[in-house]
Amino acid sequence: MNSRARAIRNGLRHRKDGAMDAITLKIGGMTCDGCASAVQKALERTNGVSTASVSMTPAPRAAVTYDPNLATPATLCTAVQDAGYDVTV
Ligand SMILES: [Cu+2]
Image (cartoon, rainbow, N blue to C red; front, side):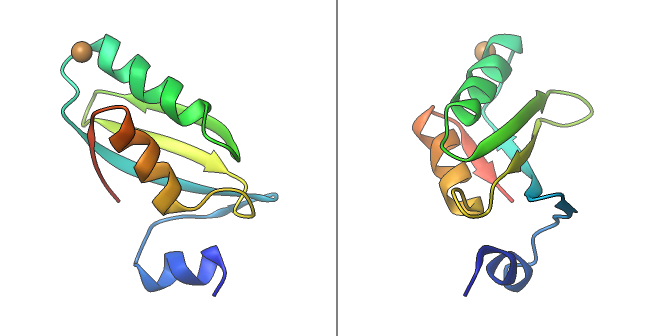
């Protein structure tokens, strides 16, 4: 099963953007801009990630575009968790 089919099965919101997939992750545990920066850097370091944009308002979220051949929603979540934050899709 490819990542797109897996994402659809999991009910994830995503869209096709050229060769990239996009996803928005809900982040837990961020309390300041430093946290947002840490999450963003963790995602940007992740293999296959093209762009990562973390915002605190109106809710703590990370918008990520990634190459579905190199990254999956699961690997993105692992990167956030390894940085010390909670994440749900
Ligand atoms: Cu912080």
